Length: 325
Image 1: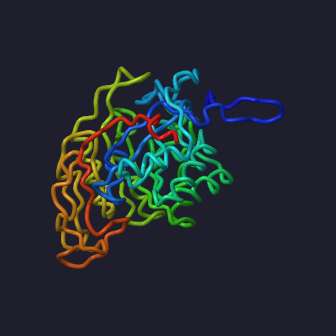
Image 2: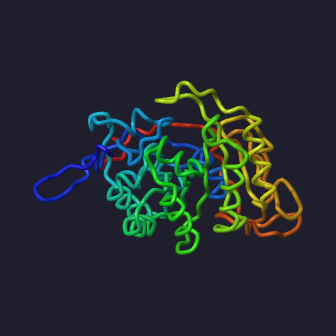
Image 3: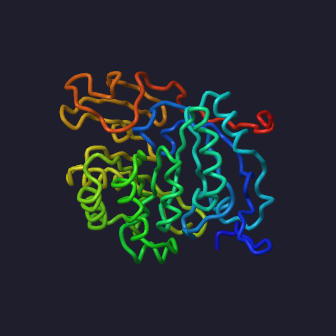
């Protein structure tokens, strides 16, 4: 199903090792990660193939490709780490398709990056069984996990996935690792956007992960096999954010729409705007050098540096051939 495993001799091998659909420098907020090195640049790449079959996939030309030839660039782990250092990226993100599909490659890249002080980010659907999960996240510094809905019916019918497997990953990340992680739910009109389902999701996050895991509600646009659904109205995202905050969650964001208030970070104690965001551009910074609110001193969870990054909203392609040796 993932299209990237094959038998060679008596082994199952990864046919896409060392090959990518392309490399690009993004703002870290695009992953989205709002509490992990805000304002910094991240070197992003993916490969072909995926272990899910989401009907709404927005990278379907990559994730559903059966042709390794779709992969336009080759890069060794060492070249990727060099590129991150040379281009000023603080981290490398495995994204566009699920990195568990190219786990061996991702782990080798992570090892090379850590040797050079570059951090690693997994953008993942979180559907992984226990053994590979433990191996994979040993090498990750941060993750954004797509919690695609909150019913088994939606997961199987729309994604060919398993909700409980994703919940297991989230609990594992919280209780057994130091990986910084945030959660994203893409709200699809008429599929997973009811108030009741959002309430159940938020209650589960509160009761199992606590109040401080950032939650992003993002807008759907018609794509792949879901061209019949309309884009998500901004009011739906606002309603979801209100539900999450009423459930007690401290850090709730909206994405894929222009909403500066819904994209900014506020102190849960004194309501000071700590990090202002206009799309992917930072507009305010009221954290001290230790990641605390400058007004009341509340410690904000995440991974912050003394000063925010200055990458802004730029997106730049990277030619990996320049870093081949």
